[in-house]
Length: 137
Image (cartoon, rainbow, N blue to C red):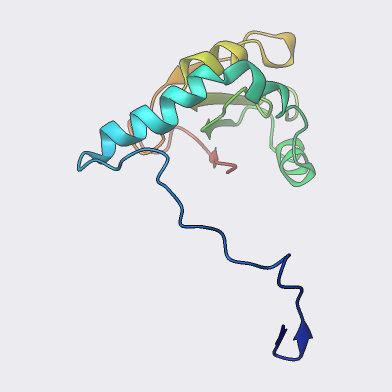
């Protein structure tokens, strides 16, 4: 088959059969998210953490440029791989919805870390208490 001047092999570029939804979407989006996202992250926390161990270089560079004494938050910190980064006396609080990932984050970099169980969408922090907010997706 030729499309827009490009040759395609029909056996390699056929359309997949109709997809079946993994889980039925209910009218309650919060319940759906809890059952299909948050519960899953809690269940796979150990394996997920083992695949997320190397910080992105651009984030590591940013964290090393912070002034001593600065306080920030990592919203959706997962296993806390970014919590130990930064110059001495930089504090980054970890926030995540997964209690099991936070258990791992509490010991990120083999030191005690400040973490909180919560949703990044709930802006529960006092205005101005953090000089930076990190959210790596």
